[in-house]
Length: 171
Image (cartoon, rainbow, N blue to C red; front, side, top):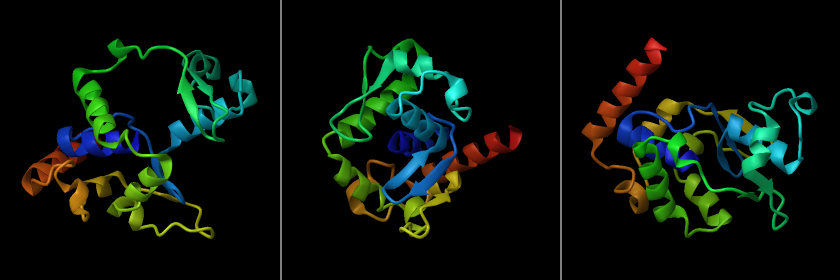
């Protein structure tokens, strides 16, 4: 979700998740996705069991389940309802998956640690979580491995940043 949000911000000036992000030891995470994952892993079946759960746990459990392979593995139990997403969102998710889907969780974590928006927090055991600024997602890509993927055209990225900031001011 993080890499798709970063990609969409830099390409379209908008996010897939529209969520608040936090830098954690193992990388960035949108708050609502973290809450959903915790609910699924803990198998919460009603909102009354977890009042901070952002959507109905029963609804999420229709589509997702905890996989016993790893403490935080979650897998789909149904096909994705593609009608829910715009063409740009589907294209972005597929593009990001094609680029990053080949990596395991530790390699993905290391990749996320290369980007300014996470690096600026220097997360460690003492500072376990820090709120991230979405505007930082527009910062220069310092690692050449992903510069082209995340659109190295500085003028275009600045235009998307301006679009995002104007849209945010109106909201």
